[in-house]
Amino acid sequence: MSTTTGALKPREVPEIDARSRRLVTIWLATMLAAFVVMVILGITMRLNQGAAIKLMPNTFYALMTMHGLGMAGGLFTAGVVLIWYLTALRFQMNHTVMWVCYVLVLIGVVGVLAATLVGHFAAGWYALYPLPFVNAAWPSWTIGTTIVSLMILGVAWLVMQMDIMRVLAAGYGLKRMFGLEYYKGEPAEPLPPAVMITAVCATAGILGTVVGAATLIIYLFKWVTPATQFDPLLLKNTMFMFGHTIVNVAMYCGLGVMYQLMPAYTKRPWKVNRLLVISWNATLVFILFAYFHHLYMDFAQPKAIQILGQIASYGSALPATAVTIFGVGSQLYRSGIKWTLTPFAFMMSVVGWGIGGAAAVIDATIAVNRVFHNTLWVPAHFHTYFLVGFVLILFGFLHHHLNSRAERLAGTGFVTMLVGGYGFVLMFYLGGLSSVPRRYADYSAIPLPSVSQPGTHYALWGALFASLFLLGALVFFLSNGIGRRSPGEAAVAGAGARG
Ligand code: HEM
Figure 1: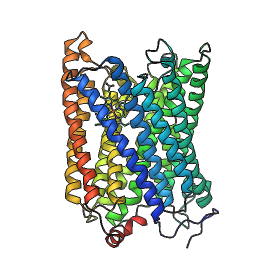
Figure 2 (figure 1 turned 90 degrees about the vertical axis):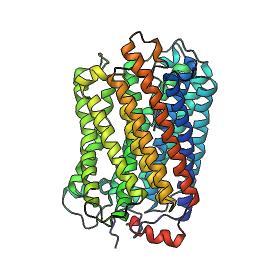
Figure 3 (figure 1 turned 30 degrees about the vertical axis):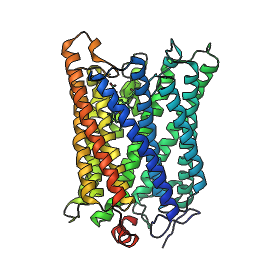
Figure 4 (figure 1 turned 60 degrees about the vertical axis):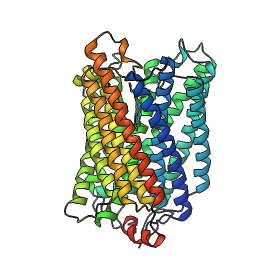
């Protein structure tokens, strides 16, 4: 019996209806198509850094800008769709809102594609102020188009996340959806962990998006009236608050799906307890300030904030990682699980998240950052927890969601992705350890052979491994197309997932 305090009652048995299922499929198919295009841009960049092809520098940086924006924005969007799915399992959602946002996202993506690939806007994915406006090698229309396109994307993200929060608040009440009842003891009606994680993600995502919107309004102002001046350090803070927060939130959205679906495969409940509530709420607080670690080299930033940045970086990574790794361990230990692709993908994503998170914490340590700052170690860590972390959850989810039964083909594609993915990120780490700087189109200009030679060498290997990853991903997509469970089989296989 549901004794929920909200105005909406969650379904007794979480279940996705056919319309919501189709909506999620279309959203994710679109995001994954964009993902493949962005991977191809990434391989092209790595081939250029590996001296296998020759791009003009402005072309390289336009590709890099598009790749960064497309990957970070696309995967964050996919993350929001995942938490929408978690909410749609329990409540009737408003589909019109999602379709309007879908159109907005497409408009935003087309705008960014035009500005970068046609107009060669190349200020990097977070286009730090005043870079887009000073001695720009790209035409003015590309600046305005990028700003307006990002604003359109921001509106879509904000609306989707606020709609999720509206439904959760109506269904569970504001206090309950964050699990705050658990501070007093075990509540009469347990809260599903996926609901709490959804609330944490949407809150952080909304705050990040609002700060991003404010930043973009200032950028728009500068574009329209170039004589105005703003504080670069303030805008660096707000831009990173936006960018760093949304990419972290994407990962946490994926974890929400794992908390929801893993029990279907282990046949064990994954319950909320006080420790889980404390960890996830602490993550919500820390994640908003963890971005300070990107500003360690900004000496005008007050020292106290730098120290807070180190504490928040550890605080945002450690509690959620610890409880999740422990939770996955206790889900799996002697569960007699039948290893199909979805639970395997979930487990491997936690491994990738753990490795990428550890590398991030190393880099967020002030003493280490003095050496690693702006080396390839930085892309190494975030590519790890995205490519062999979040993306694996997304693939595992897709396999489950599409009721795929081509386990062998999916597994072959998946293992190929793992080998390619880990090989690719390893080349970034090795580059970082050899002091190879990030964001260099071509390492041959570096007058130190001890840096330029390994940089070029690792880049070429990185391109080969990334191509292997892409091949694996394509095989995996093929597996989803050729083997599906019948509705009856899917109902049996997915029974536990709904709990
Ligand atoms: C196999 C897949 C991928 C390949 C081949 C690839 C390749 C690259 C390369 C070569 C760079 C430039 C590194 C540098 O020298 O600084 C880069 C940067 C970047 N990548 Fe990827 N990447 C891949 C996947 C991803 C994923 C999954 C994400 C998700 C967030 C991502 C986000 C970014 C971002 C944000 C940047 C920084 C762009 C900037 O500095 O403006 N990439 N990637």
